[in-house]
Length: 264
Image (tube, rainbow, N blue to C red; front, top):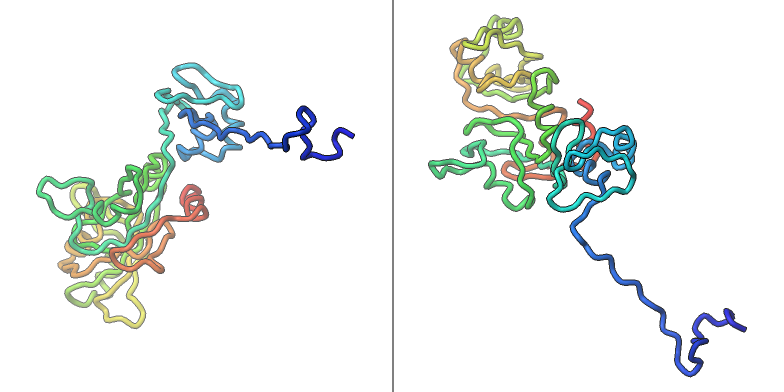
């Protein structure tokens, strides 16, 4: 009976049955709008669907509310008034050594932090904030413009912790002075979130936590009180630490770490 043997060719019983193989999908360069929004770091695909329904996305100036809409190569996609990029977001954490400049290019051909992560990704990433040439420690790179703006804007108060080695012992009076806030020109009072001596270390080693992003702010605080910073190492940035990252090495953040940063 027909249907009792799936391998029988009923149209031509003399020939063995050959299953018809489906052709592999062709990559035509299109991408679903919800995935495009997700890749831009706005939200998950499922959340993007709800936002699309509410009319927050437009393609080439036309508001799109239909599910499954595909974006063509060259289309201009805007979400909530801002132009998006479909490039997959990448997040790289570097333990920066001394002697590297935090910039993407250097006219004097000096070593930059980009040299250290050259093999990390093909995406065009940028450093989040800056560490001066002699400062070591954590430096984050990403192509996620929304997260970069969030992590660097003063209103979000992203915490950074530094291990500082001074040229002489820090007095308790100066420690208290820093806690109160040191006036720096031209910005004003440099408020620190916390400062303390490091347990088991000499009194010229301290830990300092700040959220302000002024240029060379930690060095300038101590210089104002007549101390020279001999070593400055950023040991924590936005809750991320240097655990299991050797000096000069990098690693990619996992999904939990990225989600944590986005919730800061």
